[in-house]
Length: 140
Image (cartoon, rainbow, N blue to C red; front, side, top):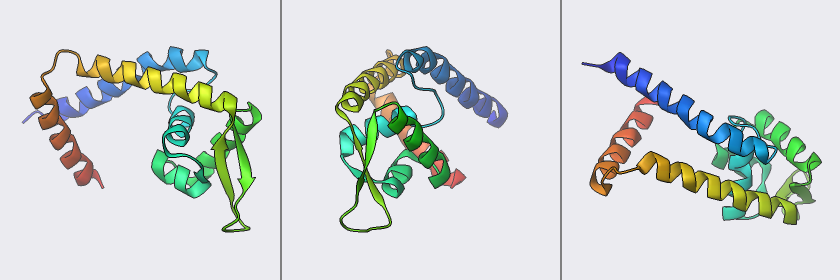
């Protein structure tokens, strides 16, 4: 069995993903691996939400998400609003500039998806998807 080779391939794929995304996100003032791009994309696609909801959807812990929100707020891409449903939390939403940047992030992720997909037939991608879901469940 090639378990260690599969692990190495997964690692190389992650490195190639970062190599592809890094320069493109850097042009937008974002960094790979911190979840900033994912946060912008998530807010664009899902709308205003609490910090906890955003952290959960972006698969980030609360402290990391708090730092990301602070950075993105300082750059004018998102803002905190009072949460009428809970005085102890804020709602996170995109600014107009943030919406534009999030659309650029969406485009970059679509480019990455197309590059990953390449010439692989849809049936094979479905099989890969199912296998990756099983791997994810094993790791959880």
